[in-house]
Image: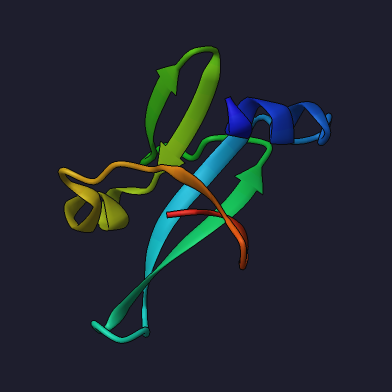
Length: 79
């Protein structure tokens, strides 16, 4: 629901892109961006009218993961 609400405020963006990059405490960090197009090597996951993109290289690190939106006193964030 939260992804859909964010995308509705960004009419030039159609997707949430999730990727894994080097860095962070475990050697990797997750990156969340809005995107306007899918690449040829992207996995497109659509649920409840919202599409999430994961590139081929990040896919192996994302296997079995779930994206959740958390609302806490320190702020709101995808986790």
